[in-house]
Each structure stands twice: as structure tokens, then as C-alpha cells.
Amino acid sequence: MVLKSLFWNVNGLNGQIKRAACLDFLRRHSVDIAFIQESHLRSVDTQRFANKFYYTVASASLSSKNRGSLIVIKHNLSLNILGKYVSEDDRVSYIKTIIAGHKFAFISIYAPSLYEPDFFSKLISVLTQIHDYSFIIGADMNACVNLALDKSITALYQLTLRLETPLPKLHVGDSIYHFFKMKNSVISFVALVKEEILK
Picture 1: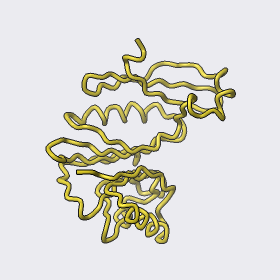
Picture 2 (picture 1 turned 90 degrees about the horizontal axis):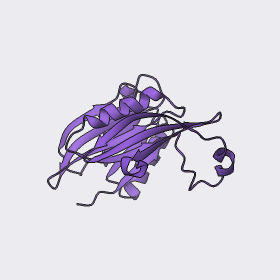
Picture 3 (picture 1 turned 60 degrees about the vertical axis):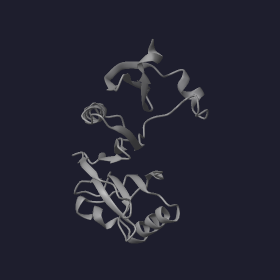
Picture 4 (picture 1 turned 180 degrees about the vertical axis):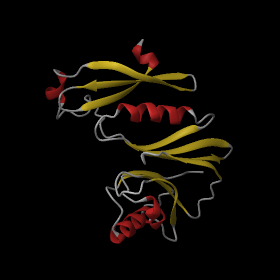
């Protein structure tokens, strides 16, 4: 089975025309599963992001029109949903399923634009509770930048970046990952580094 997925920060889905255009885009590009960030839909409105081809299977949304993380799948995609989760801060949603005998967790994450230490510790807590599943993550991590790839800001930040206190470790299978917060006066960064790289 081949699944075509899309990770998309839509910057709001409150307008009916935009919702229809986004759903049409998914259909035209034969997307099977979409990880939507920044839906800006209230919890009572998340099911409005649906049509005869797609529906919202999991949504982390509050009563206000901001943030929001959705997982949207095709109606004709026969997934056996074993469980779902939505965070209270409307930033993380996931579904658990089995495909061809393998367990998968499809996870949609919308990280804060400004560094919030509690977010990453809560995210690690959520991820470590998903046992025996392979992760497929669609995320807008916001405050991350790869200085090796983004040359436009390298000169500005090379002199001011400093590594601060490590955040909690994330154990995934036999691998251990470390989260680091790097900060200067302008922007915060978060890096996920596999333990073998640190040795």
C-alpha cells in the first residue's frame, strides 16, 4: 500500500472558499492523508473541513480561532483507527492504525512560534507514550532553522549562537535523541540530535 501524504500550514480555514479550495487541492493531488497545522478552527467547527472525498479524523482545536492541528484522510481509505489523541493546547493530534500488519502513528504537530519550554517536554511525554508504533510526523516546528542550509542568516547568527541547557531526552527504540535549546537575543532554535552524534 502506498500512501501519499501532505504536511501543510494552511494559516486558517475559517473561510468557506478557502476550505473548499484546500480540499480540492488535496483531491487534485491525490493526497491520502493530510497533516494540517494552524487550522484556526474552533473545536465545534473542525468537521466543516470535510467533503465527499475527505474528512477530519483527529483535531486538536480550542474554542478560539487560533492554532489547530488536524489529521484529514480520504473517505475511501480503509484505515482501522485503533486510537486517537488531541492535546489540550491544540498543538498535537494523532491517530494510531495498522497497515499491512505494521503499527503506525500519524502525528500532526504545530509548535509555538516563540520558544515555550513546556511545549517540548509535553511533546516528548506524548511521543514516549506511543509504544510499538512507527511514527509518521507532519509538523510545523516554527522556531527551527538549519544554518547549514539557510545561508541567508548564517553570518548574523554564527557569532551569537550558544548552546544552553539540554532539554529532556527522547528514547525511540534503541536510539536516544537529545533536544537542545540554542538562543540569542533575536530568535530561539531547537535542535534534535541523535546520541551517537554527540559522542
